[in-house]
Image (cartoon, rainbow, N blue to C red; front, side):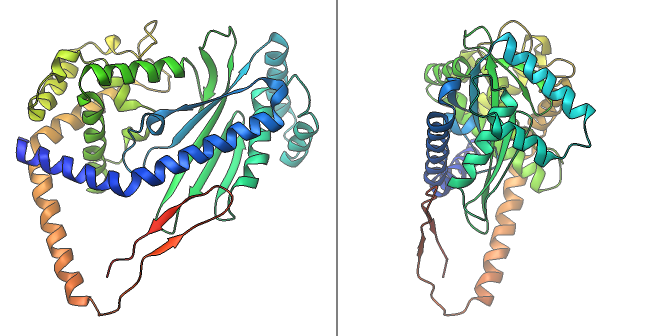
Length: 355
């Protein structure tokens, strides 16, 4: 079973990685947000779009750079726009002989129109975002999503997903296609409720979310799992949101961990809801989240609760062996710290080379 000493050790590890990653992540997130707002102002002004930061990076609850940064670009929808998008999709299916270059050219030519669809807007964002990126960064779009691979340095990169969706009733509920699934959610309300719960639990709620993300990663790295559920948008945060606040009100984090497992094992999966979306369960058939993922997550939690102490002992042993090998091979060459600064989107990264 996991004990308090090892919980403290895990928090120290999280603090170490936060110190390494937080400043870089925050800077990158702010720069992408700035770029999107400039594109919206300069090239999509007639569309009245809104740029909404979303996901774990918006909450500052990401673990390292593993989860994708997410932004929603929201369009006020009309029946004409929705019909135009339907026709676009039909045309893409029927006229496969038409090259992607031709389709893209038509969208660019139509970008000044007030009747731009989510697909049109995504294409404009992709085109203009290239001006903010380095040659080492990659950007492309598919349907209503712009995908960016933002290379920080040789070792680290961040995936950025920009989803274009519709506020059909202009009530804050966004309808969009998210990686093949049609969803409806209120991103502003979701983040607000998550932040409110975190305040009500003295920060324990999001702290436990990040702890579980870290531990799940260890399962993947040690080949005890081949799926990292935590990189799916707010997967852990959404599930743990449903656990009553009273189970977080303890200074004993081992007890909180146990409370989380027991609650989730005994709750009805249909009682797990996304924050702010209490009209239908989080886990339904053919949805962005599904029941198999929930069951898999609970099994992982049970395994972690029983085996984290062993995992930590093995990790420390491997670390000691690595240090011993490094010391054997170490030479006397000193490498000065190098500040790497780039133009366009300012990555502002300090690259440390250890002696």
